[in-house]
Image 1 (tube, rainbow, N blue to C red):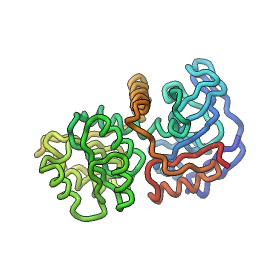
Image 2 (cartoon, rainbow, N blue to C red):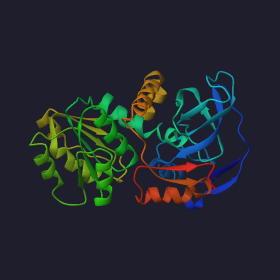
Image 3 (cartoon, helix red, strand yellow):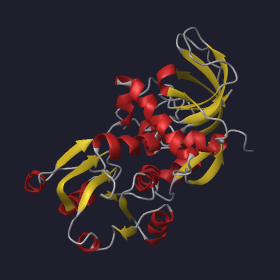
Image 4 (spheres, rainbow, N blue to C red):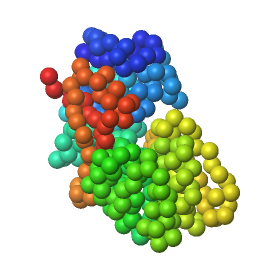
Length: 326
């Protein structure tokens, strides 16, 4: 099979596209012919050795995919012909990948593979950030930093589906327009001064009930200034490069809280809850309340191009690798 290979921690351009043996499924595993794989920012971190998960070298990157089961090992809940999507630890940037029971779900009939490939990571991440950790209630105000990113768009769509009022932050007017197109009631450019005051004005002084932040750094620090009474500031990452430093006095004075939300933790610790979250996301998809925003698809040979676009923040929404593309 054709697959990308990381021999040592490297940049996207230093990976190699090579021929590898098709793996054999073991206990509780199934072999999937990948139809589409989605990219995430942590893919860039993983191949450079900067992610908290460090696969044994050499490895094939890619942590989100959809495809068709072609073989099942002993104890697998899947059978050949099943359409599945999931979050393997790595390996999705190849023509075949091994998946495990608790990290994989059946794709409902009628869901295109490109859309299915986008579902396993960003939508469940936004789901648990808003509902489980953020305790979002209808009518509350939600602030989504990096609102034009994959998780950001998922959070905007889910928050609107659950009856919230949403403000998206993004870098530049083009990405602010994406936030509005995806349902945000207001989109503000965080590179411009004054967005904190604009939030106060737009919410009539109420502030933000739930902050969903994958950015960290100065953006998070400024967002805490508009956290409402008993607000919840949910940390899901630090793509800006600086880990959040919480001004605890802001939490104390607002009777507020700062909490973390790591989707992968549910896969390992509470697979039954994780499966319910994915099922709810597909149910909302079937109702037309959420819809993956795919900016562009690439061929397998273009994975480095896609990863570089992601790392430069040239993209919005999701980037998808189409295994059938020339």
